Length: 224
Image 1 (tube, rainbow, N blue to C red):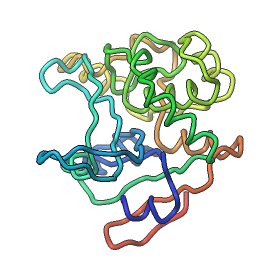
Image 2 (cartoon, rainbow, N blue to C red):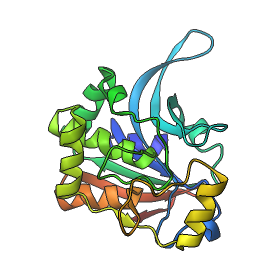
Image 3 (cartoon, rainbow, N blue to C red):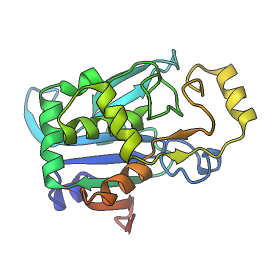
């Protein structure tokens, strides 16, 4: 992934992986986790510095599943729990990349985090948040140069088309009984959420991406 992104000249890109078996995924959703990778100077355990991609994630808490944390890790960590070795990669236009780098280097993305987690969070309000909505919010903050949550959500409503979650109401209800990480309390009517694919479509629609592929372990790519 790092070599491929570097070969495309990416200094910032959107990255996704699938952490569940495909048979457990709702119809039409290809990836479970999405984040932003930034080309960075990385301090190693021995004190030396190396260049590589640091990945800025929102992760669900392992114990309190209705809570999330912001964690920076690296590709080997990011793919450690993947069910299959394939990656989604969307490289934004250079101007968007630069704004993402500025947003994260100035730590302005931290104020966008909502720790109240739901796996099917509604991107049109700030009641809950998942990793993909956080990625979308970072993009909006970077592109519009604002950390004002109300404006970001208004832009999501105006320009972003989320993905319908095709899963039975019974399964969603059972999920909410088992874990705090599944709730539809932030939705009215049909459940729709941000996904890696819908973020890719959003950037493409407004000519804000320069490259978008699924990268397989053997090096094969598939355009998206």
